[in-house]
Each structure stands twice: as structure tokens, then as C-alpha cells.
Image 1 (cartoon, rainbow, N blue to C red):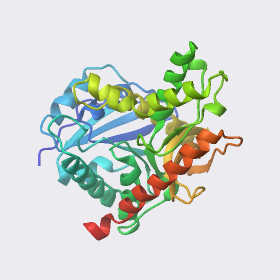
Image 2 (cartoon, rainbow, N blue to C red):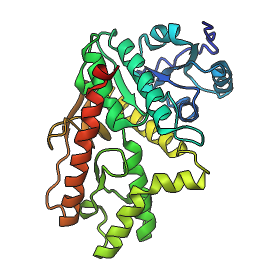
Image 3 (cartoon, rainbow, N blue to C red):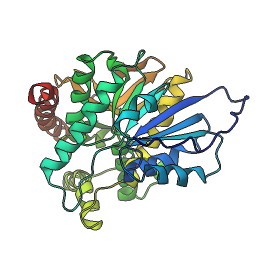
Length: 331
């Protein structure tokens, strides 16, 4: 298989002790390209590795090389180069597979993405110690439990270092809440828990800051708008899934993980192994340090409506997780 030659070799800034390598697997996909662009100039990234099986991967790497940055850039094409691409990475981001788009059936969508995560997880399991891994490939509710089972059966697995990247959910709700209430979005915070699908995402408006008065009808309409936001984007994009906001969520997630690696404990919204609600996996605000994920933020005094949403979300989330865990039986 063709291996993209190292495009750029820069001398790292010796004054910067935050030197980390990120590998984006699926870096030539639409989401992967945008995430690579955003991560290209992050100061603490000293090496950015792009891997994909797509023929135009070399062109993506060449394009990125024209952006002035202090990081080394390297690209790999093909399944046989995956092991080398992952080598020495502190953080691996999975953006491969396909997105929902015209001509892609649900069956092809799931089969393609499950196959991508299965192969990647088996390769990651060979790395000791396990690096941080963030999965952005959909459907996250199913593929993160799947990845965990594959790793458990193939070698190294540390549940504290596997994340489904749901950071974009909290950022989206933050922006929509600000717009709904005429607020500065950067000054807003709305906790989002549950899962990563329209019927498992649970925005906690009762915990929002700053608090805004919304009647029952307004809350129902707003939550519906949040839960249908991906469909709204797809309709506006003529059938294509959101990619820009997803890539920005990857950037926010990556920055938080790099801070944690630098011994600066942080919090990030992610889908992780967590059994607080009997689902084995759950999404919420997670404490992260250099050893991986820790406690998830808990909330009290939820509204009756939020409790009902959460109950239905948990029911669906259990089904998704069970399906993900059964991947080895179905393979």
C-alpha cells in the first residue's frame, strides 16, 4: 500500500513542554479533514498524523502542509499502515467510516462504520499502555461499547481512556439556549446527559446558567428543537449530516484531553463507561486527568419533565449498548 511521505519536518519549540502527538484515523473524510484543519495549529500538538484508506489522503496531507504550523505532519494510506500511524500517539481520534448522506442506506451506514471501528479497536488493543481514544464515528451509543469489547478481547483496554465524543452536543445546546433567550453563548452553560441520539439526549434546562424563565410549552418546544437539530441540518444541507459543528466538538474534546495529559485536570462532555443509571455507558460532564476519565457530574432537583426524558433515554440507551456489546457474536 502507498505510504504518504512525511510532508513537513519542523524543529519543535524547545520552550514548549506540552509536546503531544494526535492521530486522526479517517482523516480524509469530510469530518476528518475539518478536524485536522482545526488541530493543525494547536500549540501543544507537535505531531499530527493523518490516516485513511481513501485515495485522496495524500492530497489532504499536502493541503494541510501549506498551513504554517510548528507541528510535524505525516500521512499514511491503507490498512497495512495503520499500526505505524498509531505508533507513539497520545490521542487517537476516530472519524472514519461514512456519514448519513443521500444514497447511503441505514444498513450500509451501520455496517461500514462498525467494520471501521472493529478494525481500529483491534489495532489499538496492541498498544501498551493504551493511549487516549476519542470516537466521533456514528452511532456513538453503539460503537463505543463495541470498541470496548473488541479491545477487551484483543489485548490492552483501559476503560478510563475510551471516550465517545459528545462534546458537540453540549456546545450545540449552549448555542441554541443562548439564541432562544437572547444571551451571549459563551456565557451560557446547559448540562446535557444521556446518549448521543435524538431519543437519548437529555438537556437539563433546570440546571442551566444563567437561569431563564421558560414555561412548560416553551420547554417542550425547545427540547424538541434540540432533539431534531441534526435532522434540521440534514434537511438544510439536502440530506448531508452536520460536519462543521462535529469537527469543532472534536477540537474542544482534544484540547481538554491535552490539558489533562499536561496534569491539568479538566472536565469534558463525553460518552464513557459509567453505570450510574444501569446502562453501562452514559454521556455527561466527566472529570479527566492524565490517567483518564473519573467521576461524572451528578445533578439534583431535576424537573418532572427531565426525569421522564431521562427514563425514556435510559431505556433506549440500554438497547444500544447491548447491541454494541454483541458485536463479536454477530461478527
